[in-house]
Length: 126
Image (cartoon, rainbow, N blue to C red; front, side, top):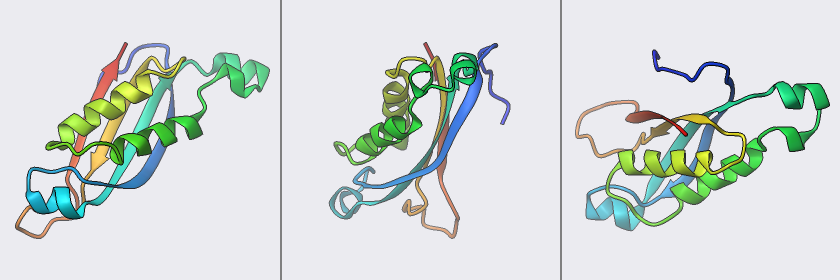
């Protein structure tokens, strides 16, 4: 992927954060729900943590993953694009996260033809 990434930031990635959500434009999606999977790539400066070897000097990616699950399981939305934006906002709310790339996977989307996945990817920064 050729996205612009802010200079001087390292990347910490958490792939495959999975939860059940009730997002979509169709009534059955809002009623029955489906599995969503989210990948996040966090733009952080890892040098302070590398020097100190202390979790306090970096981003707790377990806490970030829990925040992503909260967004997936949160209020029903119509669009995956909106879910991606909300996940990005949740990630950027963590101290030390200066940018984020979010990919929301909706493999059970009602597309009407055989397919393997629908993915919306966004990049946001402070």
